[in-house]
Length: 269
Ligand SMILES: [Zn+2]
Image 1 (tube, rainbow, N blue to C red):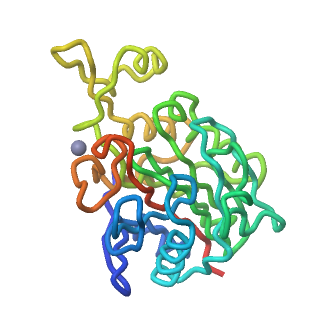
Image 2: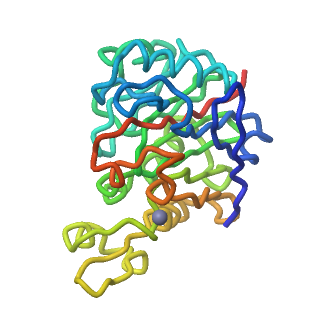
């Protein structure tokens, strides 16, 4: 397991990135909650338009984030995440979907893939697991949203498969990364969740009260390996959002009333 996650700040915008992706020509950025204009949690950098925040302020937050990470905000390509496992190919006509209004976003989708350069894919998270994929050979990228339902539906594996089918990616060439999200240290689940993931028993740690601690990072890492990604090419940020609520939006820690951080993945042009 590689830990090459670094945190930096540009123009007072804090974000984390994966060095191996950067070295291979891909921009990665996992935002933090600091220094924004949101109303939903005052002063935070909420990047999502679907959580009841003031849209103008969200767009200003996105602009600030885009400038800090060196992409164009009007090209942000987003989807309406529904905890499913649909993977959408982003072709020319979908670039910028949802960048300026939620109405324009790609509907009912939890993973985006493309082989186009300069297309900043942007998905939204507050505890759920971001899975990033990039192929230095073909230039294809993929970004998935894996909460427990998406993970149970094998979205990481389906995203690799889609990249293989559509862009002739060889899984062993892929770089993969798992961004900041709720860790096994904090993610308590019950039998409902456990029964949906019978193949990943070792990722559940039994508690005394009949519940479990679930390590979604490990489940997703295993799925990536099952899909053919080399273990040595999978980076895990190892940063728990619930553990660091001053830095990150955490749906659990904030009882649902929170903004969303963005994870952006883009092949540099
Ligand atoms: Zn934790």
